Image (cartoon, rainbow, N blue to C red; front, top):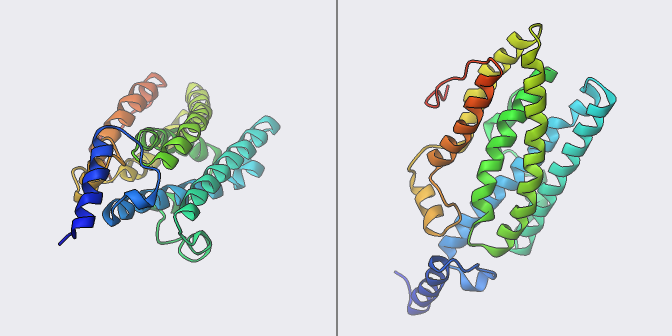
Length: 248
């Protein structure tokens, strides 16, 4: 049962949210809002860090010097994105050292445990996962929590630069008859795993995220936006794209 003060805070908070104003201080949000905000920001922070770790070996493994530099720059960007997210969490009183060094396995999506064995694997992961992240970041950039929204605007721009890298290489390798089968194999491996990262549709948690405008769309709506971009691109490269319903 909410107290009178809690009811008043909730009403004032929801009025700001519904009028598309940004919330800037924990003093003006309820515990429920804060809990939902932290779930999303912690998950994103870990995804940025885990993504960087996945790319690190490919600085050495890239096929030429320009690509070594490209991979080093992507790693630098992802680490900087992670630092920006952990800074946001630090500002709301979260022990970020504990998150990074002790609780790192608790918040990590399964896709980041999958092996990236070849350059073709790497660029397909880059193509699918960075584009998925870009669509999810769009919702965060429009969210009701001001500090997170402003941080996401810059991160989102850089994420789409990473997408362009994956797109270039998937097309290049698909255009070569010698490597097209390997590209299809990588797509078949990574597609169901990346498709899962959007989460289940119409969940109670997602309804709460939408109520507080921490997310703008249901998980499946974001998945559909991603799929509608990748399908025509991949098919134009001569690849066969699994159904959107294929989760694996």
